[in-house]
Image (cartoon, rainbow, N blue to C red; front, top):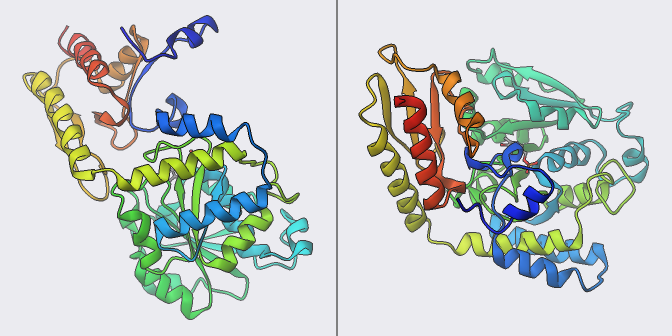
Amino acid sequence: MAFGDGTDIYRELGVTPIITASGSTTAYGGSKLRPEVVDAMVKASTTMVNIDELNKAAGKVLARVTGAEAGLVTNGAASGLILQAAAVMAGSDPAKMAQLPDPTGLKNEIIIHRSHRFPYDQCYRATGATLVEVGDGRRCHPWQLEAAFTENTAAVAYLFSPYITRRALPLAQVVDMAHAHDVPVIVDAASFVPPRANLKRFIAEGADLVQFSGGKAVRGPQGTGILCGRADLIEAAFANGSPHQFIGRGMKVAKEEVIGLVQALEIFVEEDEEAETATYRRMCQQAVDALIEAPGLHVRIEFDEYNYLVPHAVMTFTNDWHGPSRDQVWDDMVAGDPPVYLHNIYQPDELAIDPFNLTDEELEVVIRRLREVLLG
Ligand SMILES: *Cc1c(COP(=O)(O)O)cnc(C)c1O
């Protein structure tokens, strides 16, 4: 069984290679780095440059690709959220930047839909910001958002993430309302590409800062992120970040990683998305065909613009299913040889195969192991 050329390196350390059928999941290895990116990083590592100059030049590429005024390579998407919050609270004022995470005297309220609360919002709170929730978790009325603005409002945060986004007011409406109060809208769309069109979409809808992950579908270095948006806010995010000695100093991006991300992004936007989708569809169909006979298991391909951004082979464990429970199946797949991590984050009665990180060979192993676990 081949796991790529890294197998021996990990085994020597006593670490077991796994198969990740869960898409790009940081806990299960993230994404497979593009070979061209590795080459560029190795070359970049041999030459010294001024990091400010490098970041500005890389930012121009990010701006071009996203249609934003400016861009910044961040240390993962998560730290980009910290820089978003720092930028809207402290701007580029060194006295204010040095004060964080003490919010005394700064605008410190970030409005967020209750339905958009998620584990990563701790990144917003890390700067000393207070989250002000609007809506009841299922939906939000415009008057509820309107009533939340105060003189301390620093931003409205908005999340694009499967199964969550649409329980909130539409982004364009949030932007209109926030801008009427002179308040910026900061967006987390870390995993919301492909479609590649999303790289430009949220900026086009008026968002002031938008964050994407560089280590997920873009397949740049795992520890990179793409922040883009208004020039003054990007400048502020950069001022608050490494190499500058403020709140973002602990979230360094190395020169090789900056180069790797730029390289990955340039390749990503040129790729044929239709062909890529067709490949994922074929892989999912192979899984569906192999599992369709399981009685009580509803197996099909899901692909849409909000919940399954690339085709997934989805299994729903219906009441007519009498085999091992969904949780048991997950456990058995992880406990097997090789360990297989399925996609399990959306619905409690559902498991899925996300083909993003799979080779055809790995897909066959996933299907074989699933048939063993499900059908005995
Ligand atoms: C993955 C993800 C992040 C974190 O991205 P990293 O690049 O791993 O730091 C943040 N927000 C959302 C919605 C995500 O899906």
